[in-house]
Length: 404
Image (cartoon, rainbow, N blue to C red; front, side):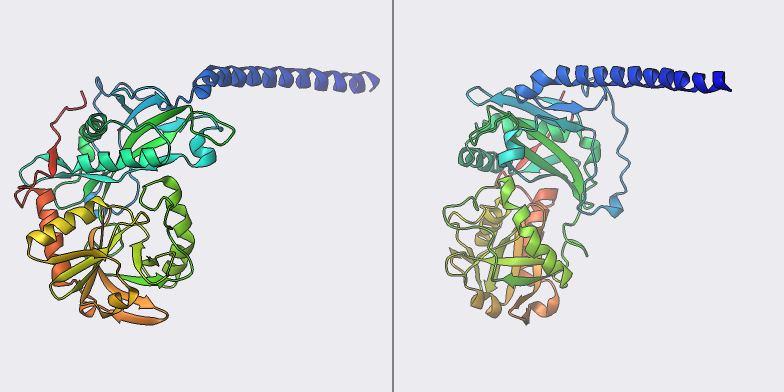
């Protein structure tokens, strides 16, 4: 019995030692992996955690997407675009790489100080079999302006547009058939270089990923939405970043938006932050009011995003003979309007079924699509799908294999 009791601690000691050696080896492997990435992290390099082969030499599996069940959720595609630039350097043409997670320093400026902007764009299949994207030059210009506002090196327009086309081309199989949706693209410019004190990042990453999408709001593309006017919280203020598509502009609206949805509304209308009586935007859409033959929309005063769809709808409406006014639009005018609609890349043109102000609900067109919104929706989507001639040169065709 004495011998047995003596061997027990010896066995335990040996097991503990073996476990310790295994743990030490694991720690060494972990430390080695960390050290291999340390240089990249310190330089602000973003690595993608994905082992898929080179997009130029591999053929991805066909997209297994049920086009009839698309909403506005993320469907991961095969590839994305990326390039980087030091703060005082120049942007390179970049490359298409497999879609995957990013690895960057915890001290990256985008994580600590929100130094980043993004865009929203779409690619479409046309009725004659082409693949096109809509006014990418306008997104490139807004992207460059936003970069300047956020103290980041702007991406040259030709690099931006070519990057968009490369991402579309590489993910061609994920573009829905005509009439089933579109390929939504999300260009991002973020400060990935590490920095502790407040200041511009030492380096930046420009990337684009994409996802096939259909209607933004539940119920379908032309289903009227119900909005509520928010009078306590504001989306932006004069002198701020409301006219910039910077990443910090969007999460703050969630508190009010979620409360509105819980109360049965689709979204929120925000008023100006000075007088609290003029319409600014819906959470992520521009707003239009129709009265007779006049269409009014809030003027761009620095706190409203200059939407590409907004700009396009103004041009199309004027071409149809409407009087379009860009000015302050009071909430009282909204209540008295014949029709209202909102615009944006994600929503296209969406009719407003009702607006509720201080508990009083105003219903437009008996809760159906108004004739003006329907007409402009048909014109815009007809142009994007190739059903209407592109006499304005707004479509940029993406040749097959452009990314190769």
